Length: 326
Image (tube, rainbow, N blue to C red; front, side):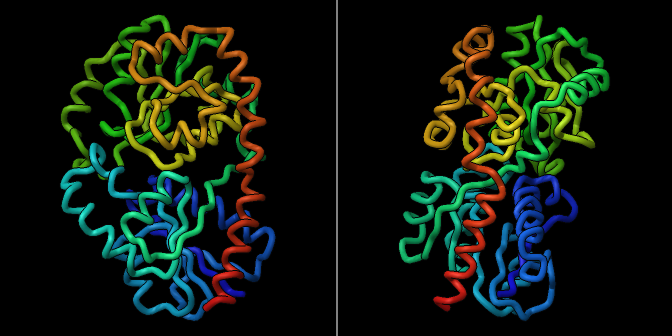
């Protein structure tokens, strides 16, 4: 079996979650079977090519490569609203683009249902995202290092968000919560996914310049594991997601998660997180120290089922099955 994992990871694409997810999967599979998998090869002769993006480079590559062509659906139409300008135009292209592949891998039950509704005849498989639990774990030295880097004392309460700076990710509610809780430090790690084409770019930049002193926007950081280790609470106020790596990474680091109550979070992470419907409820969760301690205790054990070693095996089994069926 010869497989090729392909993702567009240049320019701003490399900062989007699908690139990180593809690299995490590739590294784990290549450790298990170094001669079976290639990374972003432009050679055409593979038994199977696994795409993690569907931009112009991926679609051009798909047009000439051989073998089974599968796509992991890291994005579905509803995710673009509140995330990128001209979302309606982009969303109309999904059925046509997804229909070019032989098989779709969905990463959550809700996204699987959305894909099956959009393309009833498309073969699909459900495989969740995986997290490298050897990379993401509690670390006191990293905790102290990150706090020194952002100028926050060891005894401060730090609420961390790792996300693109867009309305869909809940940046406005993040700022409202920071205003409501001035004694807590709110840290946002991440930037704009599509530069000035990102939704509400100018408005968000203006609000960032006028926010309180308890809010820190770091941009991209060299070692994201330090950011997780330095946090007391992980907040994800997104309005739409599929299965963000940041939740798995935070949980693996043992950080209690407070996230918006949306179908994916409820179905996948509901047993290991506080889910809120409005910022008043979110603030209440983040003030409940006893409940946060209980949640912290179960956070890392919860991620065992999503260990990247197990998820890599599921992918390899799927590759072999699809190649045999071709």
